[in-house]
Image (cartoon, rainbow, N blue to C red; front, top):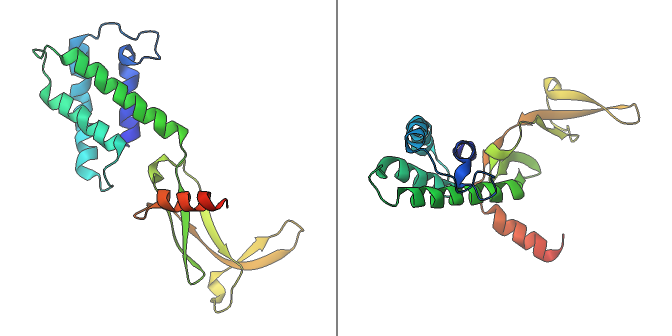
Amino acid sequence: MARNLLLELIENFPQADPASEFHGEEINGCEAVNFLSEFIPDVREYLDNNEYRESKALAVLKACWDFIENVTDEDPTRTDKFFALRERVRNVVSERRQEPPTVAVILEGGLVQCVVSDRPNDIQPINLMVLDYDTEGADEEELLQVPQKDGSVSTATGRYLGFEHADIGLASVMDQIDARGW
């Protein structure tokens, strides 16, 4: 959601985007105020409902909120503040586009407990299933017939899983794995 809000802000004010052909052109103050006034409810809802830890994107979103709430037409540095904020938004969005979300499948006792991600909202909707061919102790109604590549059919248990927000340090774990060359 934060990424979508930031993208919307960028798309509405290409004048502040150094990569845009409109960069540096004057921003219509009334247009900016009208846009930001419509933008406030979405930002407020996101900030009020956000249960995730503070991130760079959230810090920029809060800075946008501060601009919306506190910078008036009378502020002589209003345009400079807007352009600086626009650049921060652009940088966060660019970083998020370059680095894919990290996903981890959490197992305990050989059973999948959950699937977590550092950015579950950035993952395209997918149907994620866990299939377990170890059916010992499973009830008959839990069994599924899984067609195999060779035409045979195997029995498994299965279920759908969604992505949850990771409350663990996935970046630290990835660094350790990368250091070992796995």
